[in-house]
Length: 425
Image (cartoon, rainbow, N blue to C red; front, side, top):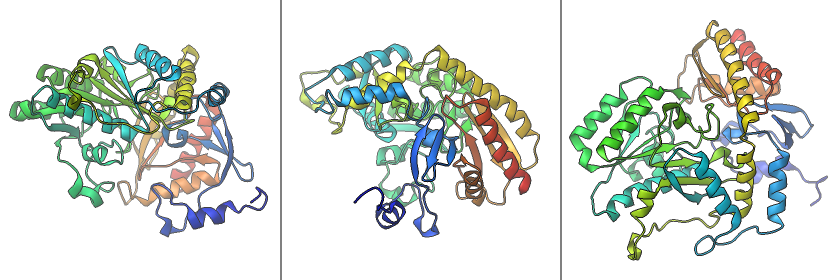
């Protein structure tokens, strides 16, 4: 079927099942023909500012030439090879480059497909680590309002609620600490360690920002205290930097705000600059050492068909190289714009709890309904799209997390859409 006769909308409506979409509401997806920089272009070539980095993945900008060129070159050389028993230069180069830039002590890299699977790997590593050492530590500690992914292990360590309810009886139990934004999470962790510390295998956190839970921002002091308590108790500390990694909060990783290094760290989303799905789990040599044995039963029996895909590795290497001083200045510029806008938003009726961290600005809209299903988010998203801005509020929480190429004028456009919507209510 030729491009001129193909009916994209009809084929999509007939055959495609979109993520996080209630098709019964009848909303038609927007056909996107191309993208460049901070903008998407629809079928009529209308520009749409991508104010959320296409679900937080587009780091430097769409169709970034350096990343596109790296992908094309690698595709002509080696597109895929099994990573069990084989290796290749892009994967080894990427591992070495990443280890140079992640928090100190993270020396081993396990490649996977996305953020959820990177979390699965970390949880499995933590639990099997203790088993391989001959200790029966089976409990995992997690935070209220956390989100770590949609696979079963990741759902288990995420907050129970709308996303997990249909599967609740199949999820493993965790010890839940209170939301670190609202309560003394450190004291709660102290109580868990006092009561059940010998049974705790690991604690998993989203450093400084609970993303899908509502862009809830918590302090570096509490993060550092949790890390210190875990280290003192011999509990493995897992940092889920799937969203916060690669400069989203200012420094390359959110853990740097608290000057901590986790035992395990999960990354994805921005790792390839938004070009390809990819994930990685970092571990210390001590954790790797618990699996290093002549006994094959101590192997980490986990893998993915596309583990360390050479094209994705090449994209990640090119993206990592772009996270230079110039990128840091652009991120700082976005944060400065956000902080100036935050002062304006904080003075408005209809907006509460304005917060900024790095390239992320978030605020809550005053609405009759609260939470993820609040209709105000859908209304704002529709309003913004009509005006050429892509926003995807988390219910009554609206946020902007743009690509690093986004200009002050672009940001003003996004701020203005939110301002106009709130004033019209």
